[in-house]
Length: 572
Image (cartoon, rainbow, N blue to C red; front, side, top):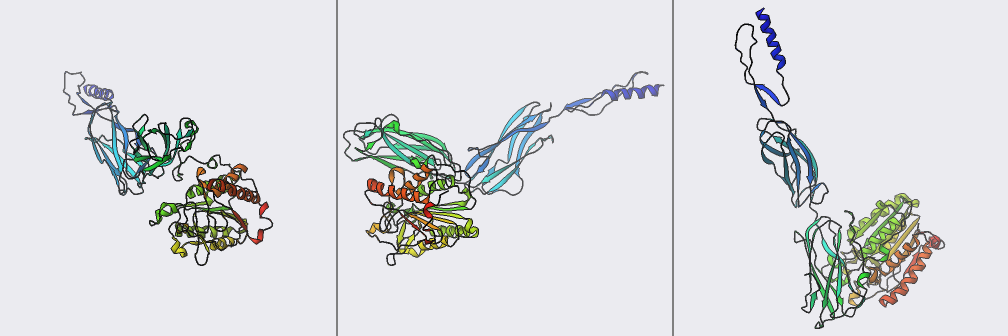
């Protein structure tokens, strides 16, 4: 009987002792025999435990693109919470990469947290930095939260793309002067300078600052000191700023220069400039000057400007034809590639001509964006390669294809043979065999078998140019040999004979290109080649004389194969 009672007591004791998630029974239990008929007594020690979790993880980077960029400081932030009732002792964070290390990537590998009491939350920030020589890659971080006795949290894994450093390029892309009421610039009267600041580089700029400076002591600020803190400027972003000043009646010069100094965090990727306004220059009123800054998507950065009317409200066509192809070239900066030349040989606005014409080709004429190739400041190698590529593509499509070739830049004839060439930015007048022979362009496109080939040349082939031609600088002009189109080809050329292709400075385009775009805009692209030819020839001839005081008469040449039908062809 006694043994049965003793066994029953042990069973009841076992049922009374439970184990919770936050408690364990530790130590040894002891029992002692007491008077007959009494249950034994068991003593126990209960210990609480921690329970760690990682939560609220996030990646923080300055430009919020969720990428670790070269020359960028970012961080991984998360919280550690102790869900248990016991204290987590000597907690530390260990960070490692799964797979190979990435060149130029650095991060905090260990971080001591200390004790975390039950119910306590601690925030942790792990610095991550990409150096200027960071590689492309995918950083697979493994983050472990370790506790002294092994009460660790489940690890956190994060995958973050790394991208090499891409520099910004901060500059003033446009500037206009105005007066409060309009009229002429006068001494002792307020003048406003409005500038457009843009980052045209692929990388973001930090700590950008503008400093306006008036070099003459008789010119002074009206209001602020001329220093503007801009801060961050993302790739493609534009900002506008106003600066008011005047020149006193002691000022003796004909023009008033304003120096604009730009800086950014690396002191490398900002370009200073100087603009000037002429005394007695007739300006519009302050409230007539208006433009809106635009954020341009990365990968297709367009230089902002106080744009022409043809740069806005570009008509949009409906369907696009997959068999339409275009190659568009704008060669402007010859002096940058040929250091012995001065900037007067550059073809002002050629890049803008090409970029805006591309917009019309895609949006108005129905060319698929992926079939339109744009080259800016193209070298001989780049021009030759792209001409070969696009003519081969069109040849494979054959009679179902339509192609446009547009070129704005210098043309030049050989001084002895008078054969005309298109001039890449890295080719000089003394090295014409490396240039692109115009007849070769005609032949390659003419042999493609395309149903329609349109060649548009905002260039002259006399040696002149928009400012100073490659031969005009020596006072030379040559009448080039006339080249004849072949195949189903129409050629629009900006000039005739020995004339120069001139700029329309107010509109920031070549005179020829401006009126070509203007007609496309007015007609929504719904017009015939004959109507386009008539409009461009008439308007360029008149406006060139009025604006530039020089003759410029565009020409249209067609292949004999289509001489009786081209005028009725529709552009889209």
